[in-house]
Amino acid sequence: MRLKSKIALISGAGRNIGKAIALAYAREGADVIVVARENGEALDEVAAQCEKFGVKALPILADVGDSAQVETTVRRGLEHFGKVDVLACVAALRPHKPFWEISYEEWDRVLSVNLNSTFYFTKALAPSMMERRTGGSIIALGGLASLTGQPLRAHVVASKTGLYGLIKALAVELGPFGVRANLIAVGHIDTERAN
Image (spheres, rainbow, N blue to C red):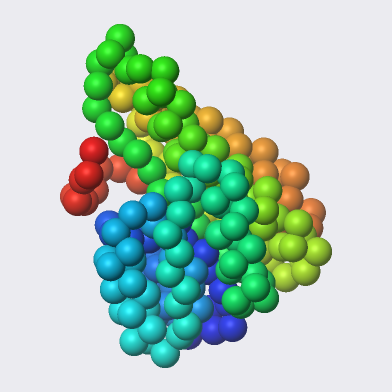
């Protein structure tokens, strides 16, 4: 129970890596705010599984690529739990498409979810983490492709490379306030894919 009394917010928690992270936090005693864009039934099931560990779970459906929905999500989480100690930005889109076939809308959408959402969540949560000075933590899931490149995923690679830069900047700027920022660059993982 290393995280007892901590509150963790996990985006992309409806399935795959996000679900596994939410369950890991719950197993360690953290209350959780689990966020997903769709499939409320699956998200409610994740929350129920978390609560089997004796913690509280708040499921919220939201499009994390939309700043207004992120602000509403954070406000609901803070009203419910009073604080957020850990932010885990896991939500991501990973479509495959040749560069010349990527539309402007697809480019914007991938960057919005994969990169901008971490900016939105951090902007909403960092002030309270900095004020408390109790070791807040911001975690983002990157990918090895941001270091190596990858065909058919220029938009994904660009978003994850930007995320790497954002987290490095946050680590330097928020560190003096006791807030950590880290990126986990995951490799290939067998997950359920919607896109």
